[in-house]
Image (tube, rainbow, N blue to C red):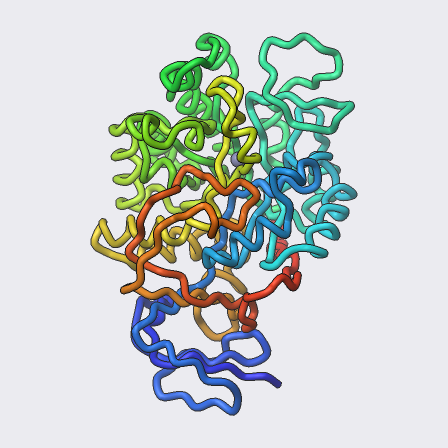
Length: 453
Ligand SMILES: [Zn+2]
């Protein structure tokens, strides 16, 4: 039996924050009480925040498929450095995760490299069958993702954005009919149905060459998000499925979501630090590092999303961590691929925002509690309480961090948050009671408690 006692920190528990001790036995939190004694190691956490490790519900490991951009080792090193102890990886790796066999192979690959725990999303294609979803559910998928405007290369087994291309190799994107057909299956598995919410017909009407940031904004209007969100909500409403909106980016999309929630749709909303901390006016300073899809929009959109988060309508902040190589990102604007790393700066971004909103303890709710619940992990992750995995981030509220490329652990060192200063520093991070300090892959696959309805 190994014991670790974290003493005297300000601990964020499900009942709120208080100064107390945390006893960890064999990787599991066993007691959260003041004045505890331990037989093992004691760590003095006076002056530090003791927070549940982050659960990033939306990352792109690029593994397998694009190891030059990222892999499970670099992804999870970045996560560990940022206080994130679970990453939920999207299914558009190559081959895409569209069956239990691919999911199991990806899990084995990830286990051989992952420094933190990971979960895997399954893909919904327009041709997916109920059996394929049931088998992925049984294999441990945390949920399913449908990319509404993205087709599927059947030869390359890859999700692609290729509107207007007439190629028999390309399978049509999952659409609202796909959602209507498969939502009852996903509901029965009691897993979330996540969508990339952009309507392909709206996008088609606004297609244009992308020579400038304004072109990017005009090619991806907020109407695409609002229309896709409303339509998906309409087809999901009576099935009882839990619909999850990935990377909500606009005031119009938020309004559509609130309308759907008001009439009883089971809907969770996720937004990202880049939409909460940056707006289009930052492009002159940040450049292509902030080219991503959906795009970082206007200051009014940013304020609406912050307000949605403050009011609790948006419950989850995750990153859409999507690195490329620095060389790819330094190409001319039209050719630079869309995406930025984010997992390493997730917790810091949210602590800063929460502090500015007047309640720093909102951050662990957005980054840990709510995403753990989304993925069906609420009995083991996302809280500092007896019985939970000892996934813990120690944060110094008097430290500061300036985001510098040489400290980034992702392959892409220059991200959208470069140069930003935060009023916090991540001091130590524990995964199941062990300090994350080296390159040893100790990550395990997390799987939701399967509740068949
Ligand atoms: Zn994504």
